[in-house]
Image 1 (cartoon, rainbow, N blue to C red):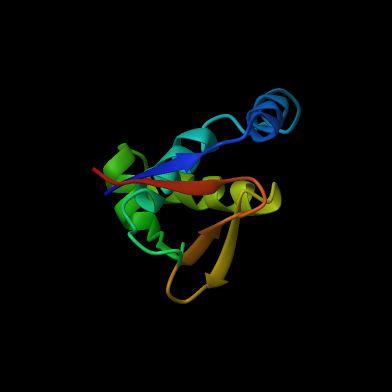
Image 2 (spheres, one colour; image 1 turned 90 degrees about the horizontal axis):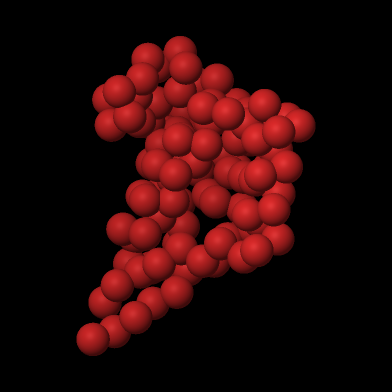
Amino acid sequence: MTIYIDIPKSTIVQILKDLKEKELGGALNTLWWFFNEASKIPTENLSIKGDPEVIAEDLGLSKVIVYKHIKKLKELNYIKQLDPKKHLYNLNSSMFSRRYFFG
């Protein structure tokens, strides 16, 4: 089974707008990290363990920068934090969906 994250045109337009108007900038790399992690989860539960230390290591960034990116992504409603102590997040389901392909 292959899992794809579906990004509707309206979300792409919003991302481009936020890049220009809301200084999404570098946080886009962190958003792509969340997409990648979501594509690895084989269930409808989209809870993603987004430990800033792991994200920083994966992206070659500092933890401080990753914390800023996560804050920006939450402010712009791309991700929702489920548990601050465990760094659990969900992608905003109104902006993204998952598709499954078998074969």
